[in-house]
Image 1: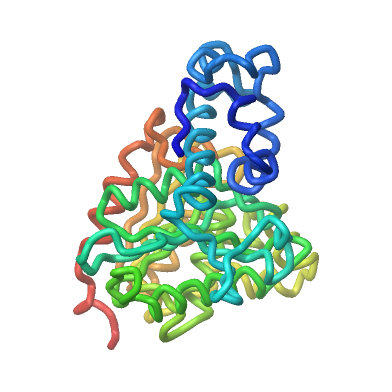
Image 2 (image 1 turned 90 degrees about the horizontal axis):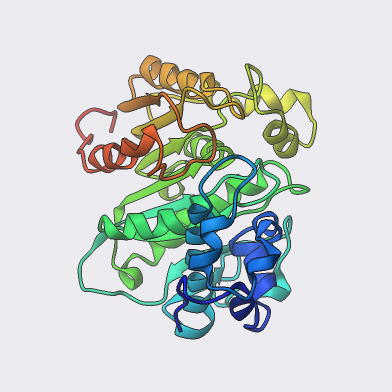
Length: 338
């Protein structure tokens, strides 16, 4: 089963529980934005007239909707992907387990089987959402498809968010890394090439987890996009409050610029100079911390793209993904302590 722009919104929503699935894998906010007068028309027509409040072309919203719907179809009908209950991996996640703060709501979107015999690097993707939600729509599913096109086995993590607090999300990512490594043969993954990719608060999750955990739970490389880094200097208040539960003493402890050591993994950092949600200084501070610790890194600041642009194909930041892949392919084994 596949959906295209020639299906209507009402055709899509006629699938059992589709709206509930889309609230997880897409966005309730974006669903409510869809123009009611075009619900029975092909999406290809609706995208010509719809507008987003923040000024993005509506085709971007429709593209993300189609990605989400087909991901749901791959999980529920085509069985080409699984939603693994991460803390009970013998079971699949279901809508009945959908919670924001309980371990039963944590899942990993994974390939259902090896698609070839090659051993490939793995990417675990952590969308943002201010530690209040996990935003699959732009930063999850499209990034999964992009990384697969670059030769990676790609996974998306649905981690715990508020009212869950630290260390719950970091525990979830650490467990996801362990899971992928321990099932490397099953998925055709090179266990020494497991990278994490995070956006916004998901960037803070990836950056902090790499500092807090060692051994099998530490990624080999990290990529953070328009990341939340500091909880004390120009912080994103929502992320800081949600992760710390309002405990001020945790803010210094969880400011990643204070957590980087020489053992930290090679890291690719990027942001947009016009980001009016998470100050670009967060990315700058991450770059300064990596430089001071002698960790291999790249820092890219693009003129425009604002916040949440993800792959940014319609923005000046569109080259970030190509630069990131080139960085991830480099061998840094001789540049860090054993």
